[in-house]
Image 1 (spheres, rainbow, N blue to C red):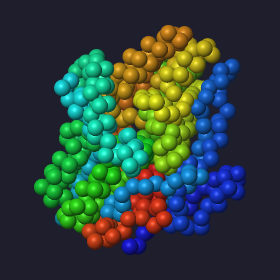
Image 2 (image 1 turned 180 degrees about the horizontal axis):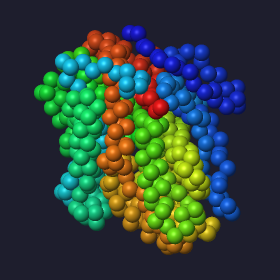
Image 3 (image 1 turned 120 degrees about the vertical axis):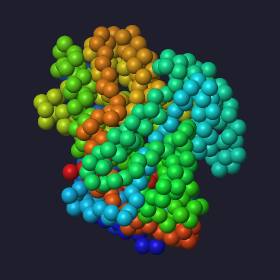
Length: 463
């Protein structure tokens, strides 16, 4: 199989890292992934030391990225060869073939729509090996463990969902985003159908795929609704999708491409900056507000051992938003923390709750929460941030609290997603493989051809 790697120039890691493990000359020799060295950014809060502000190396905004690290073990996942990652060109150069049937598959988490859905939703969540990673010898315990945890956690989770109306609004919002994306694509002369596939609740990814087949789609763009890539979010959905494709002759021969992450895109960054700037103006003294980016956390081992690029992408995303705000003369202090940890293992730090307490101790009086990893309102914004973290902030001495809304159907954001889809179309099927190749070719030295786990990631243009 020919693996096409386009524009693979990447910034060099720090010299200290290079001396321990030199960068291979070819991306095809890379065995491990993620994280270029990060340098701590000098915080800008006068008199207040804020942890979690990091500076990542900025990558070219239209590139194929080969990532590496000193992780002890390479990724061990089933073959990903039958899905294709995309690089892009400018929108104006895209030819649209009238006879083709274009589809866009939006991937998202899913959420219980009623209180009765909560326990089975939690079971689906914890039965995913990308959420709870068990050693190979104990994988037979995955479903029994998921059943135990889901039953144990269901009562508390039901209380949370009851407090926001009895169920998650995620499906309704994602359906609305899909419709707005469809309208935007048609307005840009791309008559595409848009489908929604949820990982853990209806409409499941399998349901969306069946509809795609019934509609006779010939070109498919797969777009996870997670700005930053993680093996536990986009990676899990794409791994499921790969297994579906691998066993279906129609799908494996259908032209398709994947946009694995899009946190660098100009429209996304601008939309986040717009919403943040608007919310800052609701404070009496906007310039004194600390901007508090809260991202969904992942276990630390995902980053340090499994090579998840999530932390590096999240930190770069925050920097890009702050750079956009600085262009508007907004130079507020800011920090990044990670929420929603569960279980006894260590997760990415700093933790959101601990950071809020620490900021209160250091005299911060005004805090603006920005849910950085969420594009839709759901339990973690409406209950965890709006209720739990707000209450914690007020108890910690923070007097003024605000929260930036999730992007939802914000038009600049939706239009930019449409542009991302259009930009990916020239590469639909460009690296497609036959069913035989998909079954025969798994990985070379731990490198998967698609790179949806961060090994080779083809970025859609952010210009």
